[in-house]
Length: 110
Image 1 (cartoon, rainbow, N blue to C red):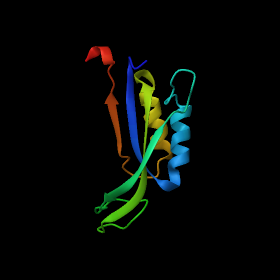
Image 2: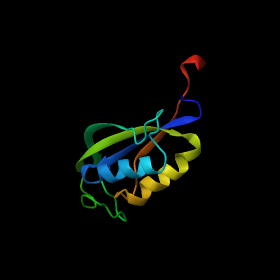
Image 3: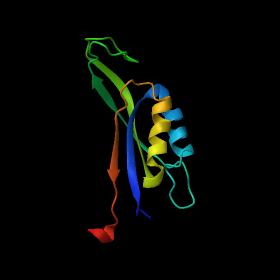
Image 4: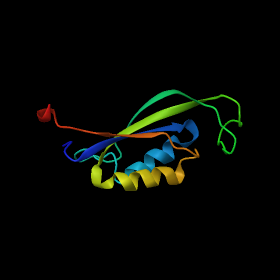
């Protein structure tokens, strides 16, 4: 099941959670068995300080900002990961998208 898969994690302001989950699933992420669009989410606070030259979606240059965000994660076939990331970046409102890609291993490989 996990062979040749990665886990994609992206941090999203509350206003864009639904569209991000939708495009991830539409691009092929989140398929587990006979289910598609499978994700897990957790709420948290993102913090950042926009620097000169930035164009923040939320906040002001030079001022520390805190934003309610959702961490969305899902499994993805490695071969589809590039397309999923492109889909995320196309609709994500942030200038710099915070996302992580983790390799997955099978339990038998431990």
